[in-house]
Image 1 (cartoon, rainbow, N blue to C red):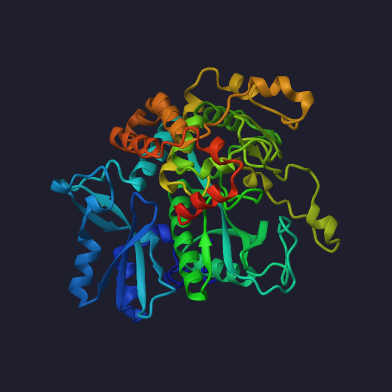
Image 2: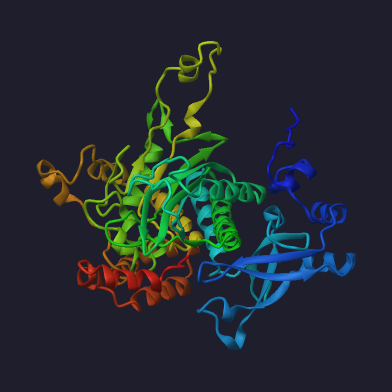
Length: 500
């Protein structure tokens, strides 16, 4: 049956009547001609985790063909610290499947994400996007399955406090207007993200809200649907760019920072994963978590200490990862437990047809709910390098299939209790802990780097660069030094306010 794309939010998909994964250069050219597009933007992530932009005016058809085919040169040494100024030229080549209409440009503009290539026309080994592609390829070659991911993007919106309908402090979860002040802003962000190709699951206000110095801080979340891991990282990059640009238009400030101030909810970047084969989700078997899922979880248990090097990349990350909070510190996993490192969310495994119970006029749906089951890594935050983080998770899950004792590790690290209660002290003592600083995270990555460098996924130069950057913070004892000083913590928050 022919697929109908008429309701697709991305206007290119709706117009071309094909999925973005099938876009060709001819499709891009025809859309530009037929829709009065006058500008083209190339966008690409750099070492600071932000999208960079190169603008092109469409001089004529020949020039359009030239830039779409050949891309352009950029100064790699200004984008990545590991590239020497003496040999810094790189090529950026647009990926047509990422094309979207820039919602903020005054001129009709089509934007695309790009891949980096070196002087020999080969993919740049240490580029974030290519690293993720290699991680996914290695996962498939080892397991015969596809690695998929999705992100929960948490952020704070900050604006002047009107004093009207004050929200309940730290009780903002799923709050409605007028107590939640930025629901309309969030839904507008969601619409723009969807138009740019983002596959959104839902959005809502989150726990965190408070006032400070006459300003309101309100936490929000946009959660995505599971897609190919490479696509998941692209969507998160574009989403952060859109949220910040729309906030700028509204006069709001935005932060994805992991911690705002003492005693208030920090922002994570939880990553959900699922493993697919022949279009079927492999995370469940006979209604329970499968051996496949438990092997992947075991790999994450093994490499969790070094995954923080990709997902928790500045000192304020470790003010969020503290004991007795929802953010995890113990390397363990469990069902529906929000204090564990890897959570198995409620997965629609009940045998009842809840839709028919809630709506008696409905016939049985026979909906295959197994596709919904994921597992969630809860340690990362908004400081993460998105491509490195998801690549690191793909590596960890792959390692689970290569470890002969994977199922034993999964059994040993499983908890079904509140690990912080006194009666569970013995179990808590058996669990390894996440690093408590950037320096400690770098040490863990140094010890476990071979797993990430296997199959040439992470280049040695990239691992060296990450370790050097983390150690430069010299924060081994910083958390204990400022934990009782909100003023010093705020100084750090301001320093790393616009991370990621």
